[in-house]
Image 1: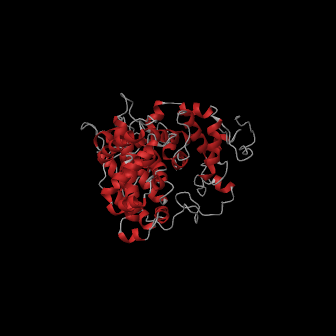
Image 2: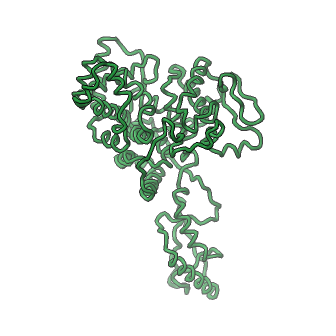
Amino acid sequence: MAKSNGENGPRAPAAGGSLSGTRESLVQGPDAAAADELSSLGSDSEANGFAERRIDKFGFIVGSQGAEGALEEVPLEVLRQRESKWLDMLNNWDKWMAKKHKKIRLRCQKGIPPSLRGRAWQYLSGGKVKLQQNPGKFDELDMSPGDPKWLDVIERDLHRQFPFHEMFVSRGGHGQQDLFRVLKAYTLYRPEEGYCQAQAPIAAVLLMHMPAEQAFWCLVQICEKYLPGYYSEKLEAIQLDGEILFSLLQKVSPVAHKHLSRQKIDPLLYMTEWFMCAFARTLPWSSVLRVWDMFFCEGVKIIFRVGLVLLKHALGSPEKVKACQGQYETIEQLRSLSPKIMQEAFLVQEVVELPVTERQIEREHLIQLRRWQETRGELQCRSPPRLHGAKAILDAEPGPRPALQPSPSIRLPPDAPLPSSKAKPKPPKQVQKEQRKRTKASGQLDKTQAPNQATVVAAAGDACPPQDVSPKDPAPQDPAPQDPAPQDSAPQDSAHHHSQESLTSQESEDTYL
């Protein structure tokens, strides 16, 4: 497919909604830089006639299938505290992963703050490290022509991915073009694996939280580390995991296991979409995000736990089994799950408390693999071993690597004062008192011609308080700094403290919403 040569704004999709097989240039000319800074969120919905419709906090059109009703909101003060804690973890990620991984796991179970979710997913999955190890690789794949066999299939799937989300509501819009770029790049990155339809919703969820390049590397990590073999041609890995799920169900809910055994319902009939899409097309959106937070931290055991919880509460009592006399009724029961069991707080609590460990899953995997080899022979897909979560992925990273160093998204002039990391905001009256003291001190220093003070600046970027004056100096105990306008320093310190999260946040694409 040829690269677009349009010169007047966005290129109109070709007949049948076709997208270019190489990188799309959405805006060209002098306005490209300005337009590049605008988020695609909203632009596609406006272009498609949805400008007047209300959008929920997740980006879904209110009243659509993906939108949710009243949600249990986290108090703003609690949210700010969580953001501060996550910023500290992300800015010192390697230390936290090495010494306080359990704390990270607990915070993932509580939910990652929405403003930092995209950045946290990149760090947890190892996608950030992959991006640093492969600079320019995505751009190289993006500019390369793809295999027409996969491009045609990908194009046909684009409009099916969350059609009521403002990113993907417009055919050929920004969201669909980025989705096409990510999926095409993966077919070039792993040509032996190609494209699987279940990868599209996975990539779409990632694109809702980060730009295309970061989403691509997170997709690579999911396909290679979290769910290896899931998207291969024969789907052998998902078949094995179906048998593992069914075996674990016998311990979690004997009633549900007995019913499914009696009805002779193959696990693939109800768990394929659950597992391959990581419940992105099954659960309410708030529950999807909480499940993904835990999934990126703890690995595939979270997917198993969610599946077991749904089966247990859908078919785990005699009353519910009586309502499902045949295969059809049972499958329908699992396709139209009760909203109560999918509700965010209930589901997360059940998943956290369910005693299913990585060791149990791996032991059951060996049992089912042996049975597979006895009945069907060797696996045709030689996928790499599965890694259970962020800690296992980090430990498996070969050789030393540079520490993840975040850079601020707001860059200040060299002479601008920086906030102190330990300073607390002062009440207005105290600020005014200190202003008067510093003004008097400045006048006294001018009269006595006190020597200049040395200013100590922290190497990490935070400003340290001035050093104490020597006892021999006649200056007062609270001398003025060298700034010619000392009365402005206190308000600046207070204002900068409130914006400390922005100063220490990762580059803008890491906090992409």
